[in-house]
Picture (cartoon, rainbow, N blue to C red):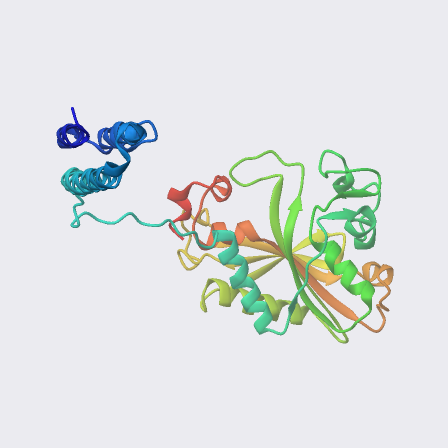
Length: 341
């Protein structure tokens, strides 16, 4: 069999194998069989030494033509296979454009954050500044400088998280007030929001970690009337213009006189309902005039300056404002609850 016949037979065999290739993998096998380094066409080229020298140019041209022909058949087959595979994909991967799109879950502010921003807005509008302090605090600032003696129950290890004798996790944000007073820049009008820690069992109204907002005003000629006017305005801004306030005598070591403030129930308007347990009033915060001992220990002359302080639980505001009956809901990260705000 001469070289021409061998090339024709090789091309015919290649054509049949290419036509039978039903996948890109089968087509690649055909390419390797005929055009690879150890393929049949390569083997035919190696036998060129058997061809007479004068015939080699002609035979070489025939081999190149056969290679070009096989490569062209493979390219045509490759395109046809790709089109067929693409058509099958389009048929099997049909997209129903009438179906609703998948929604991206976008986070938003937590109820605590919403309540805090509302309180900050109210007091900043009154000329207060927002001040922060350390959550890991010295006992001197958390207790001593706030007129809380060493034998006070609040210092008990059952109530406060002590790290050692001198350092603890703050049980209130009042230490920020003491630090601010020590700076000596008077007058002072500030609120101190932040996280606090107490050794409480977790239930519907208690948590070992929660948030407080404490306020402080120090200036000349500050009276209890200023305290009442400020907190009345705060209550009206937060709960509505019809809100009324009531002050009840109480005791706090760092204020004298001290009081607890109630607001008229914004659910029933003070008539009495389930929300206010029939009383028409809701306890909201504690307050009072800054004790002279606290002023003295923080380097302020109580003969020249007076002031008032107040403290409110941020969670309590959120629970009341949004009528939530279990504080644990604020910390469970249940999106069914959180997405309502």
